[in-house]
Image (cartoon, rainbow, N blue to C red; front, side):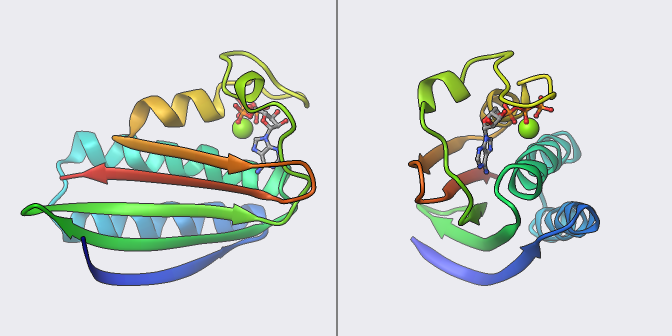
Length: 134
Ligand SMILES: Nc1ncnc2c1ncn2[C@@H]1O[C@H](COP(=O)(O)OP(=O)(O)OP(=O)(O)O)[C@@H](O)[C@H]1O
Ligand SMILES: [Mg+2]
């Protein structure tokens, strides 16, 4: 796996969700991602970035444009040092929310990307890695 470009975008306040969306749209379109796939990726970013702000108390979106086996991908990591998630299985259940959401953010994001990894524990923060290949 080769990292062609990388960087980090703060995700602290609601406005940063918009910036994270815009950055993702640019990265994906610059590497020639089709509009339909790009839209899926940007939708996943909205959900994960919003969770980072709302539940994680703010964090960062690390981004990479990667190459592996002749294909290009956009890989994003949302990380925060918030309370973490006690029950990962429950959090990945359609319709489960600890707040007043619809409980469809994580599951929706997972369905919209090619790779999804959730790494979290109480008191250890939350890290969600997603990849969409072109
Ligand atoms: N970064 C995070 N830190 C701590 N808890 C999180 C984080 N992201 C998600 N969660 C927990 O997982 C639950 C499910 O998240 P999900 O995004 O699926 O639903 P939601 O945010 O509650 O509602 P929706 O996204 O549909 O508006 C959240 O209610 C919250 O308890
Ligand atoms: Mg959510």
